[in-house]
Image (cartoon, rainbow, N blue to C red; front, side, top):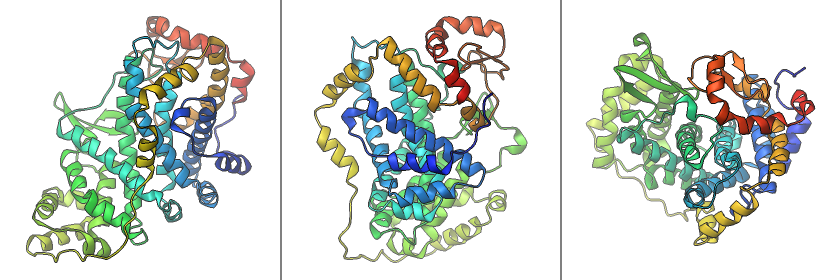
Length: 447
């Protein structure tokens, strides 16, 4: 009988946190790297379940005590670079036709797992402080993701895949589509992480404030997100919003409701613009001032009723419109700069194709027996009961996307609304089903 999904026992959570360590980009996808991914994935699911039960303090204390936040940030940036430098090379290799694309999907998913874990714990001040110098690298990471969001929304791109594209990609082309969808969701998570960082502006090092306010001009970037709102779009005359990992149609009576993502942008703006320290350092020049004043049209009574703190923003902007703020005070300090991104790039520059070919040979071309062995580990990591406990909505049909009640009896991994949809999908599902069905039943039942 399957156990009800619950957070990990404290001793197991501590063992996983202690085992976290950095990896080399060349080793991405290998056995040692996969073990680290399993640790991150289990801690990620543990963090979500703990947060839902109000018990995430233990995980926070463990990550701070063992100094693992810089490790997670380093791995986050490493897999981001892999995705931009190595993954495109893999997609271009004409003679690379993997038996299963799931090992590559796991690498792509690794970035999502880490940013989700960071989103869960960065609410706490001690987590932000324990990042130490790597907070600069995380700020740069969030800036890259928010820039991507702003660029997509400004160009009118909406990231949405049909149900057939959502899981078990069977080709490199489908994997590329999957990566695009994940990039959008990862960027939204980065927005939440950035907002939590701005909550701590009073205790952040001066270099972090300078990077957010002047190097990246995050206030103006956040204004663009308010203007274009990439998690909202109109389709066939209906407003759709992205929430809880999916797009849904918003009924007319709810169209003025502030979503969680809207709130994250406004809270980050409040933190960056109303803090005395930020006001002292930010350049309120002509361009920045004009950009910020665009916010006034969005500050309606309906919006302020939902987030009363925005009344202070409204007063600040009214004052800004009729005054010329003093130029920022120049501090004579030795400014720190982020190092993780540059270090990884310098170490691997010019080696991307060699790294890709190495990983094809040693990580992404497993034999059938190796796939079966890895399937056992995946079955233990991605517990079906755990995944269902984390899912915000009821399962959807793999073919047509409607609510599903029938499940593949062999692998217990895919859902369908009718037998007709299951039969239609069988040829595509068969390889993965056969692989998962060969995992010993005792392993699955013990999850």
